[in-house]
Image (cartoon, rainbow, N blue to C red; front, side):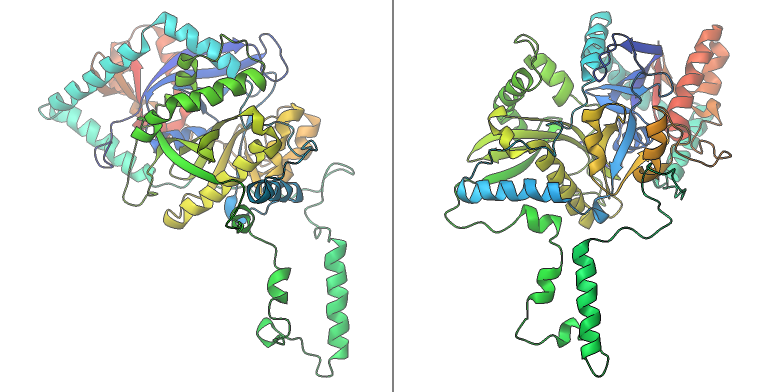
Length: 517
């Protein structure tokens, strides 16, 4: 496992131009457009910065939708777990699970609050096609091994390199230290009055439930009856009703998930976190069982043909990851990287949530489950468990406080369910700041593509202003782009590198190594 001090840098291979493939949402045969790169390795901080600029990974392939051209714009969405309160439908799912565990009760009705069972993005079908194409074009494993070997060799030679080269590398490291401590993009609060029928007016107080109004009336009545005009505080409450104030408090997410079960409970549920890349011994021991659950899920839920969910596909898509395993002293006990969160019911795996644990968030990658347990609404249940898991990690690592749910596609009805986990934010596709989803929805009703930051003067603060500082890995040597470009005569090469820099931003361009053949 990589030590925190001796981490290898990220190594990426950018694919020039845009990829066109079949959209998994609207089924347009060539409407989905994205930029892509193959990540041979990624540090947790680099991937955190990439997803904060609209990137997302599928296996080792990292892609960024061309938001103003793709048929179904995909907006990065994050939930704020520290302020999260489960909705009525969320509570129903959690209570349903507790009833099943306690008494074996099975709900017969359809779960209307779960329009899509899994947190997966259907567009991964296009990713599969692209990854297969890349595998045919070049042996990526061999190339990755060559890069690693070259880097190790370069590292040894670097100790005796010229002063000029040393200064360039040291300068890059200093910038990394300076920028690596930065916080994720800040939220932008934009209070606008919507048009009639186009959402809540955030400038006015929120609507109150009838129950709250009744409580307020009762409180005022008690004040009028009290001659001194004083209210009894919780500590002054008569001992006859010691638990009354407590029972009026809404149950926390943890209370609803970990509710007490009887000793003779019908079922036992256990959630285990296993590192998937590099694979831990627990992951290896349960690989076949986990794969069989995935295979059944793809065949039954997503109607895949029998020959599609292969071991190779499963491994590339959900087990292989460019993320290095990192265990910094101030990080969570499990470390950073890629994991499988396995749901064990009575000794067998019934669901697996694939997640990345990063410096500021838990990022949901995929969920698959045994179709026999669809009645438990495992898509919603696992999302709520992952929100609670993020809160748990936050207790040890205070900056880890967000839950990323992938992409929100407003134009696709079955993908809008992600907006039900509140409070949540959407990433502005132009300035890369976070905007509360309530303020984005009115605009999305009028247009599929929107700039959420309503300040017309605002720009991308993380844009690449100094491209010459971009790091290039060329012919087994690491150099700044300012040095590399002096030996390049092809004008298209500069255009490709500049486009890459604009997409990944200044921070990542200085830390990641861009492989050029």
